[in-house]
Image (cartoon, rainbow, N blue to C red; front, side, top):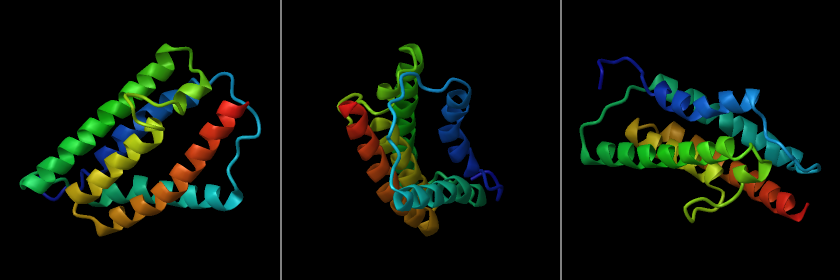
Length: 154
């Protein structure tokens, strides 16, 4: 732990970083009619805000085996997430690349950041982040799987 400075927000920033590029380099060949239901989209957005904001209020401490394991799991998930983004950017920003399996992981661009946030909940000792991650995961995975299916059909 670096004093009592709440550096947990670095986790959110690390996950958000590729999304900044995505804003300026959006996907190509996006099929139409992929929207989620209004309820799922609303739940997903509420969960998204919660998981990205909550870490900013917690310090990072890596002393115990649980904290070290959570850091390793989150770091591995972040590497997979970055590799998925690299695949997307290196291969013409095709929309479908955001939803295709990678390294045998179905919808890795959804599961990897969710794994990062779950690990962060343990690392930061935040039951609130754990709850927010579960809430976000339920909505985000529902939306992602729905979009992936519809994208394959079009």
